[in-house]
Image 1 (spheres, rainbow, N blue to C red):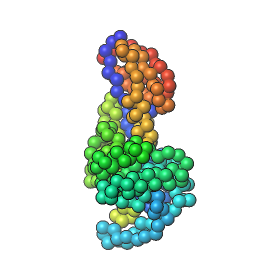
Image 2 (cartoon, rainbow, N blue to C red; image 1 turned 120 degrees about the vertical axis):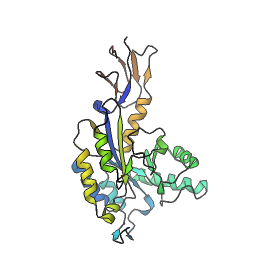
Image 3 (cartoon, one colour; image 1 turned 30 degrees about the vertical axis):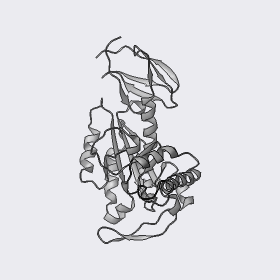
Image 4 (cartoon, rainbow, N blue to C red; image 1 turned 180 degrees about the vertical axis):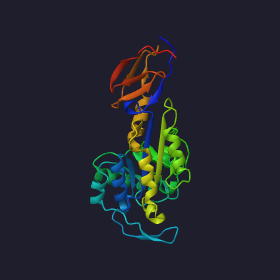
Length: 286
């Protein structure tokens, strides 16, 4: 067998992935969902189950008064049907501040209620205020979460090293947003690239800049080299890739997961590894 290198590709052999993550379950999510569906992208919406349906107003940075009301449970069930729901804490509390029993209640009761609303298990969480520590990460793991988003911008397209401290590429108001989008679309095809943008939909009302997210979605959508997925879908795929089992000589790869995986074995060759199957790898030479 010739020399080869193996690297991750996203579904259908795509080399890039794009995902969104928006917090708090605010009424402005209605407009964001419409835009996502118009442009064929996926978002993870992180909700606080105890305050769904809560009505409130707030002052935006420019002193504009905006609605920060939350969608109610019945609307949430339908509104986010084509997207992912993630946990965000029962009351959006700083989970590092209370004692461990209360922090665990905030995490677990929120997850229970959202799973009941969704009719499915939750994989993703977003840290309220972006605040966390190692103890909070362990609580999330105990509660059954497999990934959690921070608010620390990497300005890169790297895959997460620690899914429970998943740093996004940037916030949607980042001054480098469109520069990063351009870089993303021109990353070398042999290197997997993940562009991860986060925010709160009410910020578009506060800054009066809905055109910003629409321009971003116009720019990155409809590209056949990009996989448009929710956070949890990406996490599932990365973990399936990490579970691949190789024969000693590398000629066979077993994919024990329920998720099909694609890899690149050379600049010319792509391999499809079906879920639950053993695949004989074609001879590849650098």
